[in-house]
Length: 149
Image (cartoon, rainbow, N blue to C red):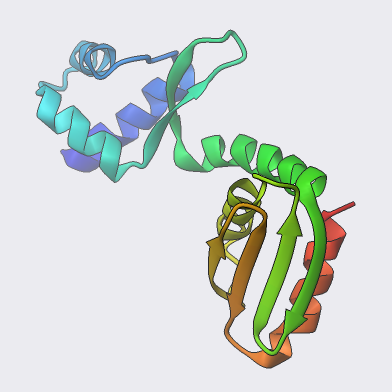
């Protein structure tokens, strides 16, 4: 029953601008699913749904992958516009940004989910990227420099 409900939720949000949990509950009831607000809330978490602004300016539920695509593009632009330099020592990369730009640029690095990256630490204008191996550093630095263009 849960899988069927999840499939229906994904179909509903694909075809309708669902703005609230209540609206989603009502839509599910129209398709014969008797749900509570708590069930819908859990389903939203399990399906990784987020509210995103549609082209019409209305916030609606979307699947995380779709919402992440728009976010990723915005973060790429922020990265390209704010990063000033990239350098490395051993398995650590230091990315310098314009003041206040490090957090958004670090979010871009985290969003990329590169297998070489263990994690990031962002200050105001500096990001420290920790890599798994020393050997990964030159190639990852080149990827970052490519994103700056």
